[in-house]
Image 1 (cartoon, helix red, strand yellow):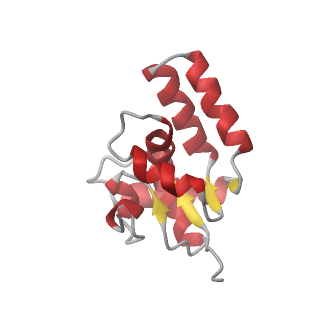
Image 2 (cartoon, helix red, strand yellow):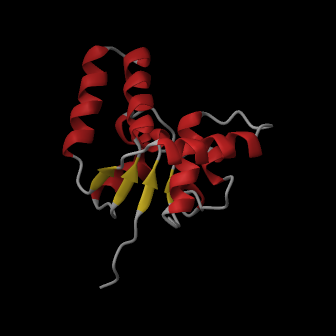
Length: 137
């Protein structure tokens, strides 16, 4: 059996998985049912918490956090000054885009770890040519 490779997961994938009204809900429900090793950053988790807090309420935001804490095989990797500098460089390189720091951090992490697949519905996460899962299904 083939080994599953690391996949970067963005805020939009978590939202699509948990929000039944999202266009990509059924796709991410299938993907999260048997996920490969997933990598994300604390910025993605913060964005997701904020989204559920603002869109719904504290309860949904806490449910999101609880899901992240038990989701296997998700690894929330440490990011530090090196990653911040890499993300800042990407923000400068793509300054004509409305790229968030969380997006730039994701792009940096995917490049640094040679990740070849990204679970996201945000086209910004494809700026460095890592294929977005929504274009593969």
